[in-house]
Length: 59
Image (cartoon, rainbow, N blue to C red; front, side):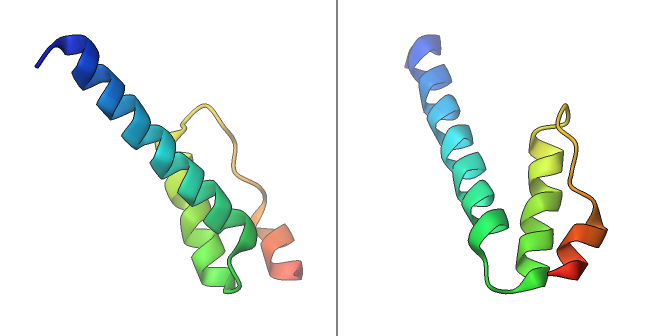
């Protein structure tokens, strides 16, 4: 297995995980599930800021 193939597999897996979490953080019906998805996204993408928790409570 070459390094390029391994890198591609990891990139696709990471991209899929981030995409699923972003969809969950946006469209989940339960507030706790949206909050957990946002927290996980904050860990996976440390350069990004997380929305204020007050916005989530107001919905």
